[in-house]
Image (cartoon, rainbow, N blue to C red; front, side, top):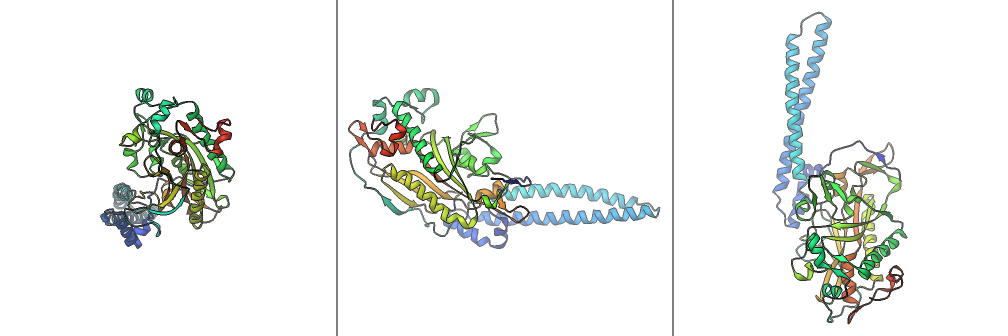
Amino acid sequence: MNPFKARKRKIKSMLDINIFREQPELVTKDLEKRGKPTKLVNQIIKKDKTWRDTLKKVENARHQKNMASRQIGELKKTGKTATKQIKEMQHLDKQMQELEQRVKQQKKERDTLLMQVPNLLDASVPEGQENIQIKTWGKTEKKNVKNHGELLEKKDLIDFTQAAKIAGSGFAFLKGDLALLDLALQRYAIDFLTKKDYTLIQPPLFMNLQTYQGVTDLADFQDVMYKIQEEDSYLIATSEHPLAAMHMNNVLNEKDLPIKLCGVSPCFRKEVGRHGIDTRGLFRMHQFNKVEQFIFCKPEENTALHEDLLANTEQLHKELGLPYRIVNICTGDIGTVAAKKYDLEAWSPRQEKYIELASCSNCTDYQARRLNIRYGKYGGEKAFVHTLNSTGIATSRVMLAIIENFQNEDTIKIPKVLWPYMNGKKEF
């Protein structure tokens, strides 16, 4: 892979401004589907018009300045005074400086509004507040199972109490076979994906603010992510984010696409469950490990590759023997970045419902526009790449599903596909 560097640019808006200029009704209709206020569209159009009007004034002042400069030169050639023209040029200089400052401020105001607009939805996204089930796999059983957190504590495989003392709730010490199971799931997913020509990446765990603004919803900065005090850095919430930013301000060689990456990292999130079943367990934790799939591709490849990502995620969970279903995420639940999103949900015998284990998103050119990641041939036209991502294995949630679905009295059976990674151990 030989990306040739693009001229460095500041982060751009999520959506092409030309959509607001030429087809604002598309954005308005999309916001209505999401149940979002539509007044933002008119605000952006007005800000854009003001910016373009000021830009014309700058260009006009520059033209007048050039004319005055030529007049001064002609007058000096003939030995005439150019005092009036010099004063006029000085006035135009001052005027241009003021206008250029206004142009910068107006563009900043417009782009700030643009950054609040979500991605345009794919036509296949279900409208409303209900996700649509599109398939199921495996046999779901209603059976009495023990609380996974309590069972793990009884078996001395986890310690929530001591972790809370040193880090707060939502953290845990994983011990013995449980720690080994976490690592086994990571190695299993890594081997699965690298055999499919995904390049293994271990990303930085910190990202700066400007970069992070290119990959996720701004609301996440307050609600989800941990900021490093006194630093312009955040702990990553998923390896998807640094993988997306890996080629920021680069032009990718068209012949290298699609680029398929397998990211492995700890993930850090403020979110934690509100109920006891979540707060003292593995389902929602402030720190967990995840193997992620990420793809850079050409626009015409994104639909097929989105289905490929989902197929990988399904196969990973199917080989573990976990009953699951796939849902097409609705307009009321899809979030800001994705144009289309699937979730894989595994069966929880204890809760007698499906619980989310993985998400699979087609983000079209939404992230690439803000990160300025383009592709093309050397010397040819350039276009924005499309980005897609999907969970491979989120270890803590998968461990919960394994413990509930394969629990037998006080013993937990280990899925056969993991035996080689568990040193041959078949249960604990």
